[in-house]
Image (tube, rainbow, N blue to C red):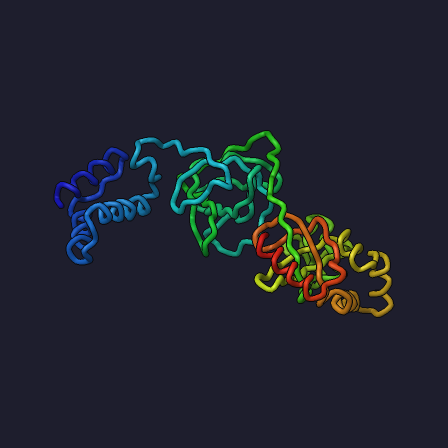
Length: 309
Ligand SMILES: [Zn+2]
């Protein structure tokens, strides 16, 4: 055990971190003798503990290489891996965590991933729509999904290139079972295009909003529930209600809510085939068609189709 502790101590020393041998030995002893963890497993676990504590790249510790591999987003499959990623910042999200400086969605040709820039990283800020080389970022698995963490071992390089963000097109067929709040006739911020809540933008405060149509639909194919977002074009297409008419309707009723009510009455319970790209839990719909007749056989086909997708 002493020898094992010595080895670990030496390797950390080479990386410029002094960890008392007794401290290493104590942790090893606890794992091996008290918890009966196999020796190699205990070693890995103790090393990981100190790597985390001192914010050292695991690859650097084991291989002596500080250079992380360049990885495409769709190839990110392992928790705790340190990587380099070339990606575009697709979206910045609200962040109310004070130790986090930015949070959002990044993407490359193969897909998208959530990312978190920790305040302690001292980098950024990144801008929406711009591309960067994210160096030495670490994968964190959370709720079965991978996210990339930019911490104080990481760095950012701005790259002068428009990375095309690719997402596979998916199809979904099912019944529209609900339309959520924030649908129908809405207003958007003229500066950042965010949907306004009670006339205010989260970022720009009270603004003179611009009208738009949107539907946040809940779709159900019998096996799976899918949140889908329809933009103005698709909303006009499936409801037959143009934006100008919706504005006039709301003005007549002195209530924006009448548009949503009409859409619910018209669409909920009907079947649709839609396709688009999947971002997080949403299907961003590019095209939608009603599935007109569905007798029993049609329903079977629908269920069969959904199992293939
Ligand atoms: Zn705004």
